[in-house]
Amino acid sequence: MTHQVLLGESVSALARTASKQALLCAPFSKAPVIERLLDEIDTEVEVELFTRWRADEVAAGVSDTAVLPLVERRGGSVFLCDPLHAKLLRFDSRALVGSANLTGSALGWSISPNLELLVEVPATTPEVVTLEKKMRQESIPATAEIAADVERAAALLPSSRHQAAAEELTSTAISGPWRPLLRDPSNLFRAYSRGSETLSSASAKAAAADLSALEPPPSLDRPAFESLIATRLLQSPLVQQVDTLLAESQRFGAISDFLGNALSMGSTDASYAWQTLMRWMLYFLPDRYVRTVPSHSEVMVRLKPSRP
Image 1: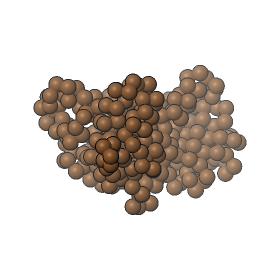
Image 2: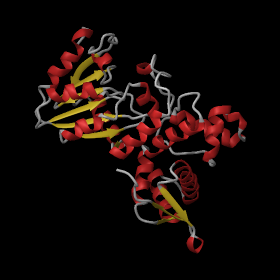
Image 3: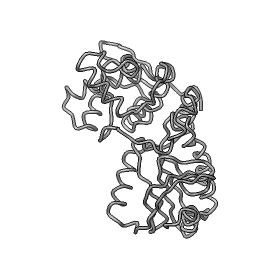
């Protein structure tokens, strides 16, 4: 697949060979491209799309939340993997790996195509198997609620800010599963807008790590910044697990024990981690959770969603 003009057509041809499963994986996925590929895939084939939804990237036009209803109408599933950078297209036992996102410019279906590469490898290639396993572990199911939240946050961002380099975005995120470190989440915007050096040394280090993991675009005002962070927070697999537990009222110790097991922490570190995470969830998602202190023990619960 060395001829760029034929890249998209080559992907389509391989998609037509699938008889059981089609796995599409790219950080940037556009609705017209997904729709075009779905038309090539037999309706009996199971379809899974792994992508990511960052409000700044949606605002820049390189990703579409509209891929969700397209895939779901086919009986398929969409999963969100925030640290995703890999590009993998697997159709049964044949796989393509390389640089191309699921966008028109990447696959040569635009006026100004990118210079991209996709190489066919066996789906049993160890690196491909490992990538799929890790991707599934670090993903959450996409939902209409998450899509709506991301769209609201994207609407607060100028669409042209990152357009020129939109498909060349790179990551400086810290490795491993992220969890909030800054104890006072209200100081995150201060560190973002004025520099982490305006905080104490311990808070500055924590804020720098959080901002590195969350990668907010520059020059946002506070409402846009905090709306964006809310969408990123709720897409964290760890937060999703806690969110599920909070469908029922949970005492402090129950969530602390869960985090201790999930993060392989001792009880003191787990309590500290839950105190920090609780503050972030209450600060950035105030309409989603409520905290009470009956009988000297903190209790937190998720409110029923007020919108679909």
